[in-house]
Amino acid sequence: MKAALLRWSAWAPGIESLAAWEAWAKAPAALPAAGQPDAKFLPAMLRRRCTPLTRTMLTAAFGAAEPAELARLRTVFASRHGSINESIGLLENVVRREKLSPATFSHTVHNAQAGLFSIAAGNRAASSSLAGQEDSWTAAWLEALCFLERDPREPVLVVIGDVPLAETFAPLVTEAAVPYSFAAQVGAAGTGPGVELELGLLDSPRPAPPWPPALEFLRWWLSADESLEQTNRANLVRWRKC
Image 1: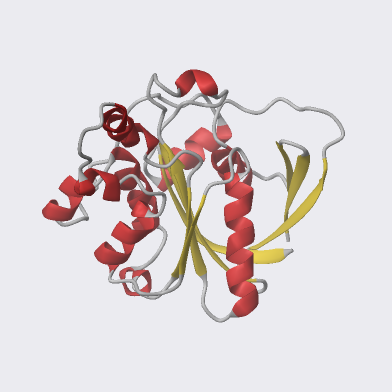
Image 2: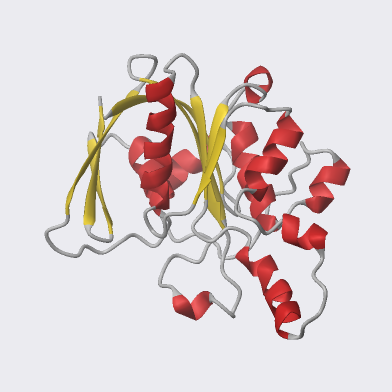
């Protein structure tokens, strides 16, 4: 399954520019566990409504497209956990049989980031929001390929991100607890630098790097390596530059 990676943008605490990411890719190290972008490109009223995850994901999204493109690109937003930290108070209200805040709830649904992006960018194009556990990055790329299969003329903006889980949920998962976002503008094969994705069966468990799969993909993309293998539960994911 081939596509083109036309443009990308990423954010993590202290690593925000292209030069900073290129330096990190040459000497990758564990990322800071706290921080969020200022997201000053958003109007102040909208920015105040954003959760830390929304600020993080929209920062990458707006960095991966020209202003004229933001309003027309189809989008795929992916997050393993979404704004689940903000859901804790709502769940406690349910237990206490107290009223829920509609405003708070509206920012904890899984397509909140896609909705706020559409408002900020004036984007009415098709959008998909998904969560695929540790497979979320691969699932997001596959979703973009589905969009391109339907209409290869317009690229798709893929945005993925997460923030560390609150103490309530953190013990339930084993993963890199870092705030990050990565956005990739994906086009039809032949329209830019090529990426081929191949799925296979995992023969044996393999250790994962101490950063999210999407950032491991970015590290590879910025390297001279021709291919990358990642493991997702029972699957082996092979990426190749083409």
